[in-house]
Image (cartoon, rainbow, N blue to C red):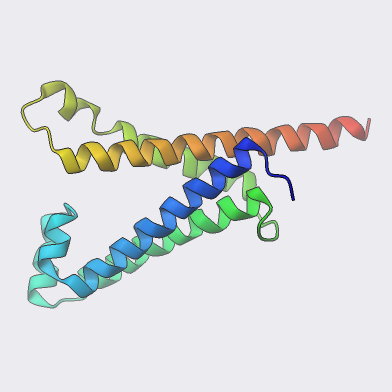
Length: 151
């Protein structure tokens, strides 16, 4: 199976999403200090300290979304079967990941609160967003080729 550059980017983006999902799940095991290191909202850190369900349930939901990103990426790359709503999912994931990557720009411009962890996380999610943009473009190109061949 010969993979296009877009498919390779989707595989990379999906793999990063899986690693991020696993990291989130490990925070549940690591406890409050891991949540704090991951820059989780204070509510999540407090929940972990108090042993309430907000931290683990919220973290599992986020991890499931990240695993879903992986499934859609691998589906578009042809590694697994085609999933329903593939193109809209890829576009949505591309938008959300790119937005997550770009959201830190105001804090970088102010330079007062420059956080290396946030810089790295934002850069990674911007890259993942670009991977999904490339995959979305490829999916729409494939659709146009199929529609064009039926004319």
